[in-house]
Length: 114
Image (cartoon, rainbow, N blue to C red; front, side, top):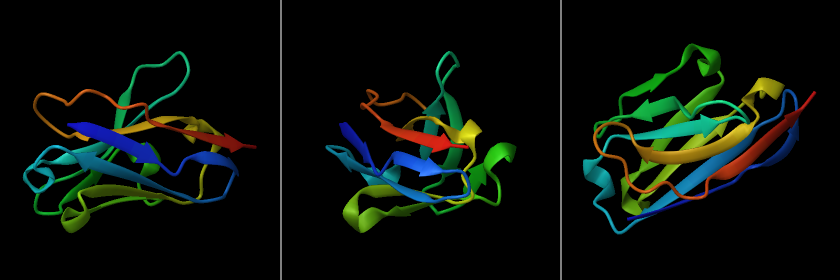
């Protein structure tokens, strides 16, 4: 299974980005999925998750600002990020929400300037 995240970039505080992650080689529709991030010097953390049925969950730091969604027909996971803050700066990854994770892809860098 390959995970290809894209859509990151440099944005000013208050701006928006939409991340995409294409999952190839697996049965995407059968997996609960999540977006993770890793800031410099910090551990990777789960930011948002979405179940097979579409139920979503978020960490408190991004609630009301980020929206996770999925398109099973396109084997693609999305993360809409609004009202970005400098503390959102990190490399963002997608992977399974629970169970044994797939090999992590390269992720996509999000940098928010103040």
